[in-house]
Image (cartoon, rainbow, N blue to C red; front, side, top):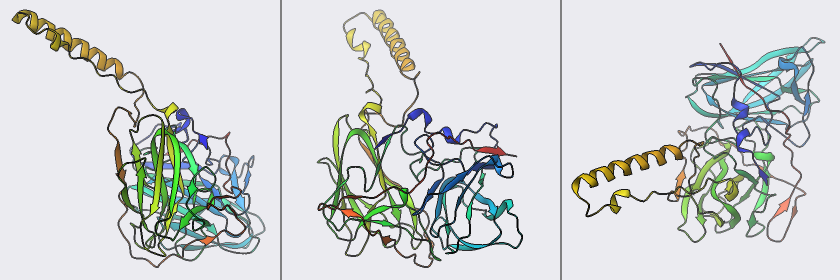
Length: 419
């Protein structure tokens, strides 16, 4: 588990250039996912990506490269379009690109020359509905051809604020300071060995990329996953596909809530926020996620996030009405007392608002929400992920595997608004 510094949560999305109503926001390849850049680019696959720097031919002198089949890039943004720029090395290779879980587009890279072509626009899409979007880029060719990323150019209609609301650990609907709980490494207890870790594969249909390149799923109705935490809020992330199951989620001894994780038809997106609970009392809580669908439907957990009690704001203090203390006094004194009481209440309220605002308040009633899905588009079915081989599975269904997503905890990228 990793405690995420609240002050650094949105730092990766702060531009050094004045934001306008619309424009292109440049996201350099070096804006890599890390604890200080949760909305950064995620690099996945079974091998390590090569992050290079100090090359004047490249934007900001950096690029990220891989020559291995199945290497993937995952990025989510809020806007209406995105363009993908990279170096085209001599020779040829094949990419598979999927936007919002739709059918993949195959992109052939071809450079008949003997020198690399730098900062080339490989692919772009525009005219998207303003809102959250995801793009997954995978190396489909099995040859030794080197592919990678120089930068993305995101078309924004809201200045330089392109942080997504419901996708990835950097989703703005998650309160700053939350802790990431990966589905197979960080203390989630599974009821049986029917829960298994899976990874997505690069294919000609829609492709997805899970957080740390893995997701834990069960196809057995009634199987459960439980997680105990000391905090005041929790968020549940999974993938979204037409073959997913309905799950029930219960906090402590409360009433279970049913959540549908198949909301977008035959598309296939990952790292999506489906459910959250906020305003819990400080202290330990237990959340139980149960497969509530039918046989062979997929109940999955990509990751959870929770807000520790230590990172939660102090409960709000309610003022005692001063007017209730002046009963029986003559009319003029009552009026004066009421005026004084109003002044005191106003002063206290104003004082309580001087600090930074937060999306979670322990004084509020417990509130749950299920995020609405995107409009359904009937596309060809995307194959489910393949099971990971060689995983050390314990008797209770838990296990461990080395992480594959690369991150640089020292770099915090600054997207730039272009005119």
